Amino acid sequence: MSRSLPSALTFPNPVNEYAARSTAGLVIVLAIVAIAVNQPVVYAMLAVGFLLRVMAGPRFSPFGQLSVRVIAPKIWRKTKLVPGPPKRFAQSVGLVFSSTALVLSLFGLGLAAQIVVGLLIVAATLECVFGLCLGCVAFGFLQNKGIIPETVCEACNNLSLRLPAEQQQAAA
Image 1 (cartoon, rainbow, N blue to C red):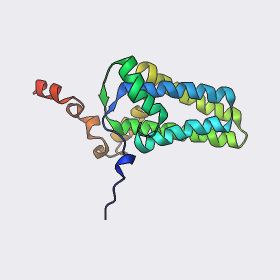
Image 2: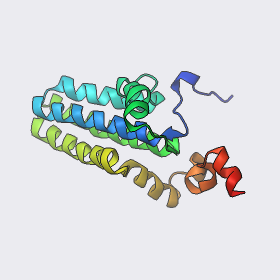
Image 3: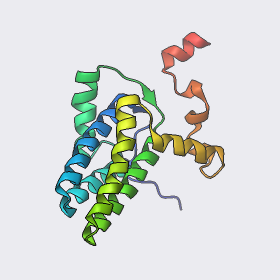
């Protein structure tokens, strides 16, 4: 018997790249606060945010909602659809890093937690400022090596699946 996740726990596909970049910007701010405060509760907030986004994209994430509803449409005023699976993978990597920082902090290893979050800031800055998603790059590498099956993200290899319907018709 096949079970599917409740619809509330699905990750969007495709994703607006500008909303993802906005979320990365918000992550940068919270991560800087986490480094400055160096307290487990702030690392926990960072980790919970990633967990919520891994589970359901922006649906339950305050940063995700702010990005999708306010920042992307009102500040960026752009939409660029990109495949969802690599973005979910990137959020999972962020969850691993932020959870690692939380555990390190709980064990009294604040400097190590700060270093881990510093690496997270580097990745989030590349995403936010340049649109370079390191998690997405890793996803593509793992897909090319056959570790992630191509069926997980057919649009990642087929550019025509990424284009809006109007552009597909124009190209045909």
